[in-house]
Length: 171
Image (spheres, one colour):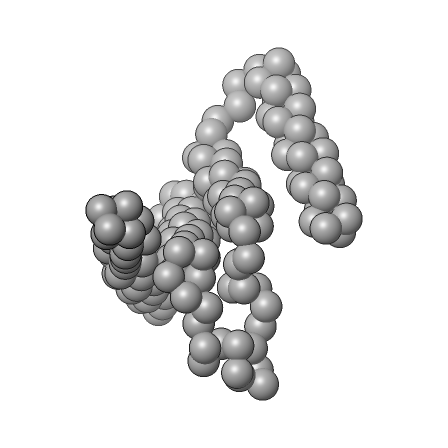
């Protein structure tokens, strides 16, 4: 009797995962809104600059950095969505509407913690690549050695992305 009650309590305790699902989705929505506002602000700044006839120093770099920063936020929001959907399906229940939908994309279908980890890891790598690109935009290279480091870092990113894509094709 006690064992049965205890096992039932343990099994039902999995519903605490709902907190991570709900707040993960809230976080993703917030990031989507913030990123969209950042894009809007960049667009307004661009149009104001174009129509004013002035051309501030580093204007292009600033606009590109703002847009890349927004893309970075969108990617992090995608990580939160994948995380929320994945842990819901793993711990609570399969999402019936997604399973029944003709337009259902299997992108969010998660059947194991390893699948969830792999999907999140790939998006996180893309976040890091975008973040690297954003930071490079505002970097001044003063010596040939700094340029060499920059070239090596781009090569390392390219090689890493190549192997990441190879791993994705063998699953």
